[in-house]
Image (cartoon, rainbow, N blue to C red; front, side, top):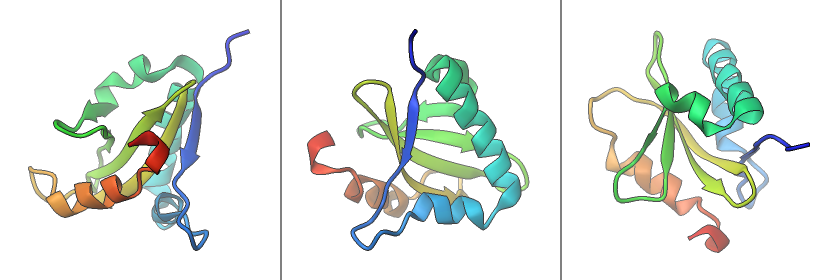
Length: 113
């Protein structure tokens, strides 16, 4: 039987998980994110197409969560159906701030660069 996708959180050298902490502080966003994560785990990334977008010029993809706040969760795909959630933030402008992209890029493990 084909196993679904795995979704993992980036964990800093101090053991902190910024994306998990971000979601834990926002129960409504967390609920929406977990619903998208569940779809991805069961059916793959193609089912999440309305919610995902590639960031041009980077290896990063974003999960878009709309609602009261427009939230973005940056991730990379890894070999063998694995996703690594790198960074999450509330998007307040039309363009993604370069600072937010830089944070996500800095969290990509060397093996994935």
